[in-house]
Image 1: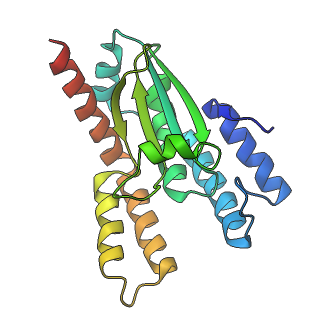
Image 2 (image 1 turned 180 degrees about the horizontal axis):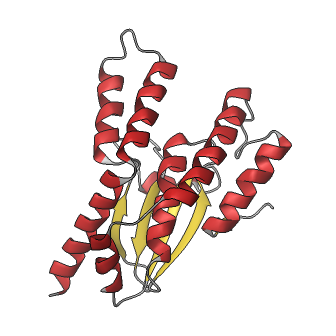
Length: 197
């Protein structure tokens, strides 16, 4: 499957195809990125089965009245995406007002350049639009506590190589069980609700 816009189900199936073919997304087909893609497919498979949405979040989703188009910029090799995208997909699926689409960073450089994080092309990045194309909110590339782990490591990587940092970050994700991410979406929807009153 080679296409520019995916549903979540299509993206996940495509990742499984990439793993079977020993490939990843994008032009850089390094062994490391191929391995990350296989690991990410396993992470997503686990989360697809285990994510349970917070009742407060479900309640807020039911109160959305205007349609929203959600676009997530990502790549198959992105570990943060594998930890967040299944949760975002579950959130979107819980509202008939949200339409989730996934696009690839490498295929959409102009879009990515509009949504940099501290000047970098960090993914995943979610942008929500109304039907007129006006931006409602953005989220990403990772929940705030995970972003803090990343920024602390970037500021002072002494004694911690990339593998050590990755282990620390993904241990945090495993222990957090998407609580932080869901809490951030609760805040986003509460703010939207407050604006519409």
